[in-house]
Image (cartoon, rainbow, N blue to C red; front, side, top):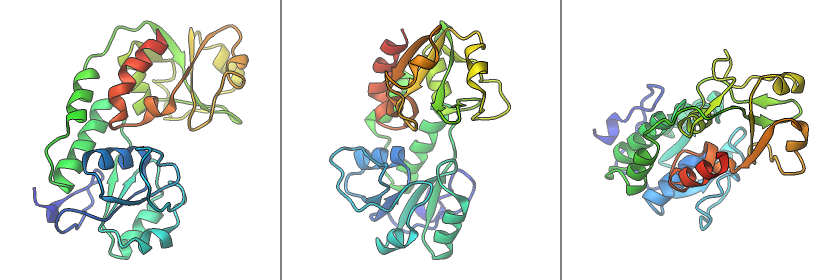
Length: 254
């Protein structure tokens, strides 16, 4: 596919010409994936783009509320966004300014996320699929039998948990952990704490992002249930981190 024909995950044209060399990423996972696969192309990112740890570029605010004037100041030939993390009005404003924006769809599974990453890297940047992507696909291909039924809070005050069709939920399911809210009508339900403790789940998974659950803030709310603290990056970032995440998460949930 020629770059001029690039279409993003939502079916919108991305009118890049040639290989993008000044990329602003508004998504931590995409920042890491591009910088590891095509070093030197990221010229700015959000303050939440913490990996690779060696990345030193200007920061343009947060994913939900990026400072668009700072994005424009970088003269990007491509902006990377995500349909769940970034506001449509920001994407529309950048496009109105003539800036190509590739919006990745909110992935509901590991294969979906890796498929989108493959398209971005091979079609937008014109490279062969990177080794980490091939390794990640091999590691996460199988779905293990269910060993645990879990609730997975991602926020407190109010309580918010993973519901249907989430990337993190699929990550855990492939490790044998079934999300008790996977059949919920919402992707991020807001049950009461009382409801969470009465679900019949035998496990509570507490990641350290977006809410920073810790040993002193999280397990104490579920005294009758086994709790496990996990890296939020390993659980919810799609990209090179998936390679190390497999062994680390597998050991934690077991």
